[in-house]
Image 1 (cartoon, one colour):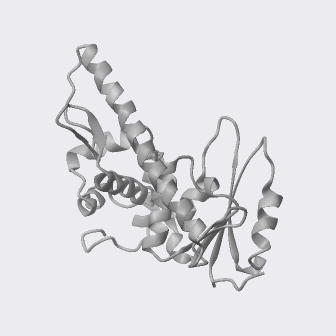
Image 2 (cartoon, rainbow, N blue to C red):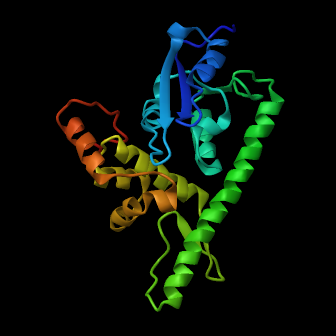
Image 3 (cartoon, one colour):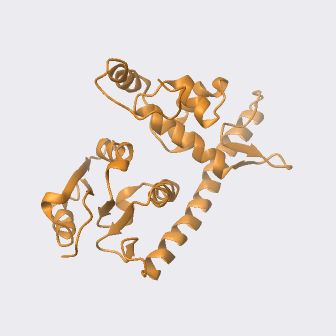
Length: 243
């Protein structure tokens, strides 16, 4: 067992058809002491793909020195989501360790892990293009049906041939905007912080999962917002205007 960082987030995801909770935990505990691991466990069933513990992990990620899981695909359903998470970990100097794959930022000399992570970023870019293509198909269909098509969704743009594509930097801003709202932050101030137009907020949230791969439930947001306003939940301010 290697020496562990002080704060370790252990993420486990299983399905009712694949009950391997114990196997994943045991794999992680071969590397980390049980007293040092804060467990985040999601159990998915056929109709329910909710990942409350994954979302909680994303919201509290600053508390940890390392995120450990058995395999990289446990952390996301798409390359885009994985790439976003890995990039966030890198920016915050939080290590990633996959116990059953040669993917780890704990070992700085792990060239294989770096190679696989970089390949994942390449696949993520391809996936973003496929998402943009699906949105484009929807726009094309609307045009064929005689419907008026306005400007592209936030985080997207149109090339000189009229085809939609994702702007990676702006797309990431919109994703982060949605994630921060889910914590209970105010919509207007959070949109201003991320450079999201006020007129785009409603359409972004309405199509959050389809266009940005993040689930958003406005009723849940209202509950989280009420907790913040009542002082039951504290959030670090994004800026002086976020109160």
